[in-house]
Image (cartoon, rainbow, N blue to C red):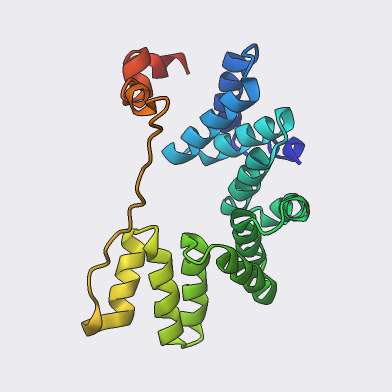
Length: 220
């Protein structure tokens, strides 16, 4: 699958990704390093480079995380038809995984199969009641059908563990005068009393740039 990616991404995106691959090619943790780089590049908006890199990471270490992330990137990049076979294989091995089920739902919806897509979304929600993305997409589907009450309920479930501006704006639209600000649920963080891991966590640099110098990006 990754062989077809270079032919459809911009040359400069391929060049950027190849520089990162070259940088880590001799690293003993090569697959994990380029997977981390892919995630970082996606967050920075370099989506084509990120997709190519994650595909390479999945080739190097074909575990569930890398394959699922690769498929997710493909779907968000408009290539759900390539992502679905990967996700279906993962789903056959990792039963009842809400992340994989949600990604399958999103992919089938992108291809226009609303019935199949919603089936997977419902499955994801059964496994993880407050799945942020599955519930948000479910809300949009219900809203489009005119089922206002059900769409509001789905949106509240989505907001339970993930608050975003688009979702709160949609809630204001749906609830109108009945809208009340949503309280964010922050799960308690547990630290190990045996190893005192919080002491080591405090030693982790706040940013990658701070650790390696402000000019590190010039090496890319």
